[in-house]
Image 1 (cartoon, chains in turn purple, yellow):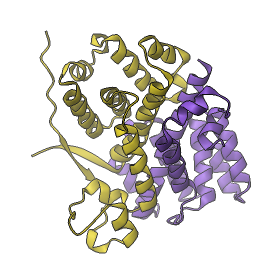
Image 2 (cartoon, helix red, strand yellow):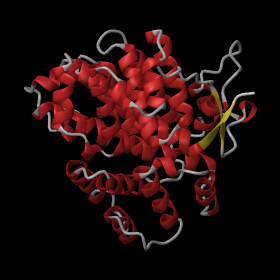
Image 3 (cartoon, helix red, strand yellow):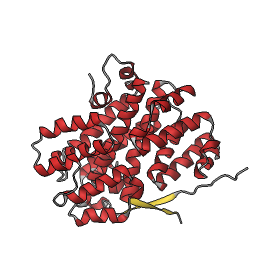
Image 4 (spheres, chains in turn purple, brown):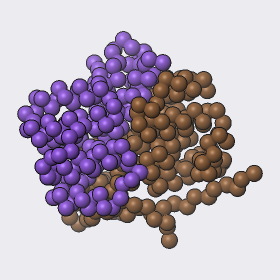
Length: 160
Length: 188
């Protein structure tokens, strides 16, 4: 059975790459556990699942990944998003707080992590995020950046 | 002849207050693997323990990617990690993985070339790995079929390339925690 990463990379069970991925069951299982831990955790720390999926959709676009954009679009529609969350997912910046502060941070860390400074974390705290939320948001940002890179690498390998 | 770059380990400090062990929940203690005989837990681990589910899941995956037996040689995984850390600006991670690469290969040559920004001094295998690591890290769309062809031309098979993709990508993750949630300082 294919998993989320196979789907993102366009791998089907009869591809050689499907078997090659399973040479590392730890990576297959581990990446899936990570996905669940940031997108549908048992304890969401007050960052709702539809916010998390909307942010993932936004980051898939920042990473120019149309396959993952489409996947997160499908997930978001099923999670009853508000108009604000739909705008956030589309990449808009003119949003209510704390969403406006969150997306400025998400965009910066996705595109230019090198520029991260202490003041950026202070802005999240000023917008009302507590420490568990700051860490959970950081893990979500980092995961989607991991996911888009693995998916891209596997796609290149599949077609090369 | 250039002299070897010698890198000293850095110390990392968070921008937010880490979890205090005396106030940690059972789930946090379990994720941090705190036992009566192992009470020393780094600030980094205690910071991430604010969200124990993601910390635990990522730690298991990270350890598999960097340490699992067979497949891509350990120094090659470290070189992928180092390339990502340089692009992503995580000085702490770059120093850790540069030192590990030097230890594993018993040579400072590759690390010296990279710290002096002379990638042209790398051999063909290291050059192919480093170039792919830089491009995939900068933006996924910068990596191309030419990168895969270069890796194959130095003898890497699909399983090794999958290992390398994961080593680079997990630092797209780790760098976005370490460099974002805190900063590195020279050790005392």
